[in-house]
Image 1: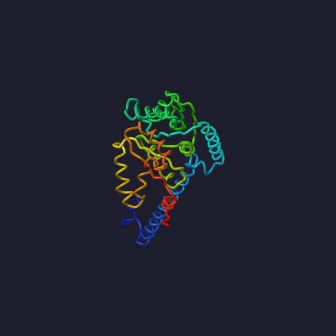
Image 2 (image 1 turned 120 degrees about the vertical axis):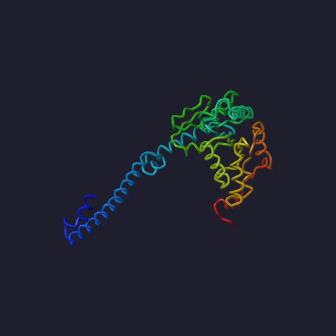
Image 3 (image 1 turned 90 degrees about the vertical axis):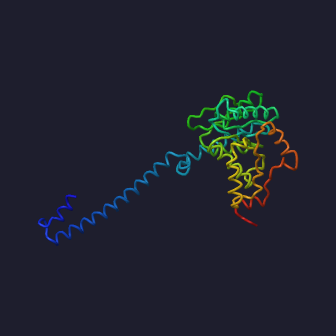
Length: 287
């Protein structure tokens, strides 16, 4: 503002000097804009470079040691999970489900009934629904597996006969999926939604063997199911019969028997078993 007042003062400078001062000020303005863009771009590059040292997905691309750790986790995981020795059912669900919640009690009851039916129970090893399912299997004398993740100070629950711990979510997901003969999805948050959607995608695209999937709590999942029907099916994102890849249940006592029917009868307990045509549709190929 002080410079501007000098330019506008008629007695300070002549007309020619005033013109050149204004030109210089204009150039200075555009130079300052260029510097701002230049320095902000450099700052963004620095932030991206710093990010690669913090997050697992970025570390894997920049550090060979991280890749070796992942390979080691896969090796140890396959070794331990192969000791289960029988059919296993993986149970997903939220970590924040309280001890007295009816979904917690249902998950504990399901764990017990699965163990009695000869199934190992596999969970993510944490609290909430995972603890409940592990507890039911453990107290029934069955095989109770916890596939734990070292994140956010999550401690493994105490009801595990086989316990594994991983640093990487994708290794953990493979262990939860590969050895399972069925999945049960209880109410949960983003993590549970991620696991449910990924299993559906793997079965639909035949990257994972076909198997029964159950989601517990018709009222809890009603909004998501309506979105599947009204948006995904009507919009052509998925075929209508893909909704038969899973069942919605409120009575968890029927699940062990239903899983047995899936494998023992050709009707597969009413579930859709994806064919080659489904794999091509999932890949975007119509023929």
